[in-house]
Length: 60
Image (cartoon, rainbow, N blue to C red):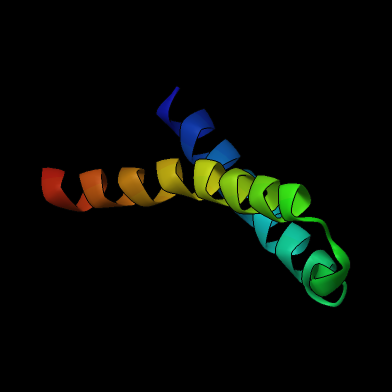
């Protein structure tokens, strides 16, 4: 089960990076609500990956 957690965390992180790259050119044209949603999705997707990495290093 831990392998699935790590795999899907990497997939989510890769997807968020692609999303940020995709919207980078037209970021100025987005509305405030769209910008806020992109930022919240990025934080929500990257936080488990970062916290899991920190937990992994502290467990050893």
